[in-house]
Amino acid sequence: MSRSRWLARQRWRLVHWGWEAFQRAGVVTADTPAGRRFAAFGSGSMAAFPTGSVFGERWIAIGEGTLLGPLVTMSAGMVPGQDLGPSPVLRIGDRCVIGRGSHLVAHHCLEIGDDVFTGPYVYITDQNHGYADPDEPIGRQLPLNAPVRIGSGSWLGTGAVVLPGACIGRNVVVAAGSVVRGTVPDRCVVAGVPARVVRRYVPGDGWSAPSASAVAERLKDVAQSRDLQG
Image (cartoon, rainbow, N blue to C red; front, side, top):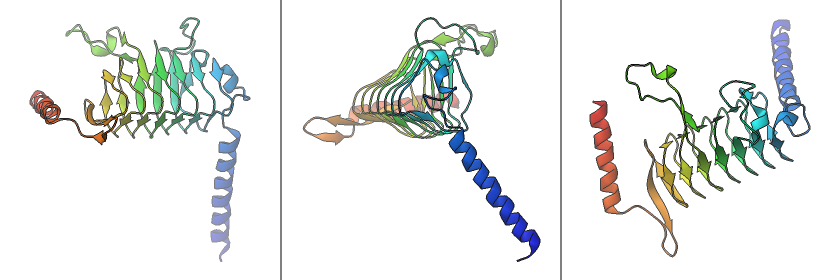
């Protein structure tokens, strides 16, 4: 082996060894300075390194045994240092897993129950831009807040978006790429934009598809959406 190839291999090994060492050393736990900034950071919980943008930790509470993947963004408030009152506005329960690159954006009330798992790049927020004035740029209008709650035991697939005011029940599956708004009942599967129930658990019957009338209503919604886009 030539000297140049040998040096290239050593550099590769050094870079990867160093990166793995940084990842291990940079993990945020309850005992680290970063972990102590949070309103609560439960025992056994950790945030992988590198993190995403994180601010407003004083108003973020994380339960026990929860794993936050790399590049997860968590924010409480519009800007760092904003006073949001005496209580946390973003709460994550016990034994949750938040996938790589996900965003949890809270201003008013965002609650995630226990044992909630998400795929990567999920976006959950309790605030959206207002657009009441048709002549004013959207970005300059006052935002609107509405509480968001995600029930224990639920799973949110890759790229799902949860909008302000959404209330997701327990043990719900949200299909990848879905956009959730409104109320979602317990023990069902939702999919689409906007998300609709495509399967539901019925005691005694198990998991079943929605009725024919519900399917017809869904097709009508899709057709109306296409008409608006066209």
